[in-house]
Image 1 (cartoon, rainbow, N blue to C red):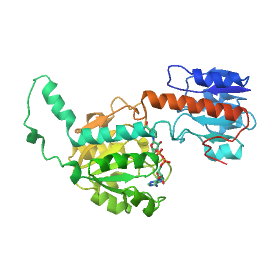
Image 2: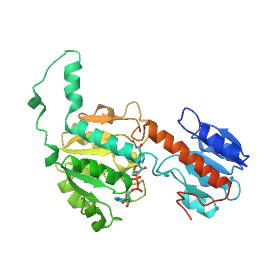
Image 3: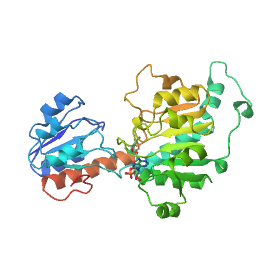
Image 4: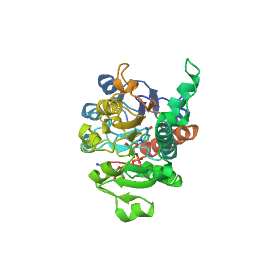
Length: 319
Ligand code: NAI
C-alpha cells in the first residue's frame, strides 16, 4: 500500500507518516501542483493527501482500486469529485480543523478596514512621522450601527456571525440552502440576494466555490451595494471579481476590502488590488494558528488510518 502527499505547507508530517507506517504502507512526500507530475507521482497510490494540487480525472484514473483522496482543509474545488465517484475513489476533506481561526481572521479584517487602522498607522509611522486628527479620515460607523451581510452561513459564517453579534452589529444573510428558522436562532435574518446588497455595510463571503458562486459578487452586484460598503473575502478568491472590486474601491464606491483569498494564488505582483486604497490583504492565512495546524494533521492521520483499513471515513464528501 502507498500513501502519497502531493503538496503541503507543514514543517513536518510526523503524524501522517506514523499512521502510514503503522499500517505497513509506504509514504512519499512531494511538493507539486503540476498536473503531469501529480499523475506520475500518484500512479497506483492507495491514499493521496493534497493541499492545492489538481486531482483531475487523469490523476484519478491512475490511482489504486478503492483509493482515498484526503484534502488538507475545507474547500475541495481542485478535486474532480464527480470523476472520483465514477472511479470508485473516496474523497474527504477536513472541514473543522480551524473554523474558529478563520472566523477570528475574518472579523479582524472587517474591523481593520472599518476602523481605518492601516491609514492611521501609516500616518503615524510613515516617512513624515505625521499625526492626523481622528475625524480627518472621514466618518466611521459604530459597530452597533453596522449591518453585516453574510453570503454563506455554514460553520464559518455562523462563527463570524456570533463574533459580530457580540459587537452589536445587525446580521443578515443570503444562503439559498439555509433554513430561515435555524438562522434566526443564531440571530441572523435570512434575506434575498438583492436585499443583502441593498442593506449591508459590510459584505462577507463564506460560501464554497461552485459554478453558482463563481463571481457571485461581480461588477454588477458590487455596483448595487450601498456606497461605502466594505467587502471581506476569506472563502475562495473567485467568489469575488477582484479586479472590479479593486476598481470600485479606487473610485470610492466601495469603502474598502479585506481579502485573504485571490482568484490566482500567489497574487500576481502587478495585480491592481495591491494598490487599492482602504484595503487589507493577507496571503491565504485565515486558517493559520498553531491549534489549526495540529488539528489538521491529527485529523488527516486518523483519516489515513481509516482509509488504509477500509473503515468509513469521518468526512467523506462523495458516496
Ligand atoms: P460550510 O460548508 O460549512 O458552509 C458553506 C455555506 O455556504 C453553507 O451554509 C451553504 O449552504 C452555503 N452556500 C452554498 N452555496 C451557496 C450560494 N450559492 N450562495 C450562498 N451560500 C451558499 O463551509 P465553511 O467551513 O463555513 O467554509 C466556508 C468557506 O471558507 C469555504 O469557501 C472554504 O473553502 C473557506 N475556507 C477558507 C479558509 C482560509 O484559510 N481562507 C480556511 C477554511 C475554509
